[in-house]
Image (cartoon, rainbow, N blue to C red; front, side, top):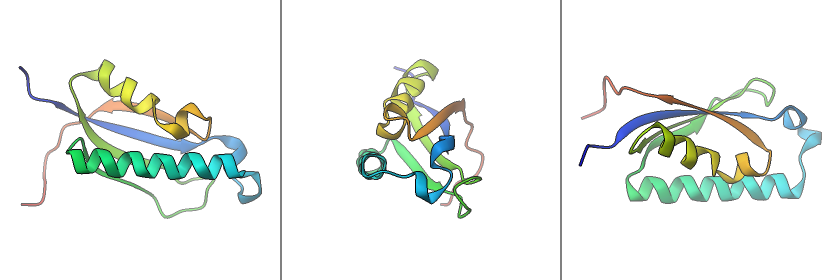
Length: 103
């Protein structure tokens, strides 16, 4: 069996949520579920790290580096994220090659 590959997911808020007044309780709930899912995946060893830039909503991006068997599996996992399913964020998935990690 081949070793898992690494992937980078780039998440962006949908346009309607790029201003604070656009948020609903349902949007906030989706983000909470997204965060719990990332925590569980990190505990399982699938997610290496995740976070977002510390910028206003109209420019911020979220990044997740994670493992999957292949690109199709990586896209399926990223697209199943609650924030993507509920139209809070969009996601792009890229193959990612780790070059340097902390010992």
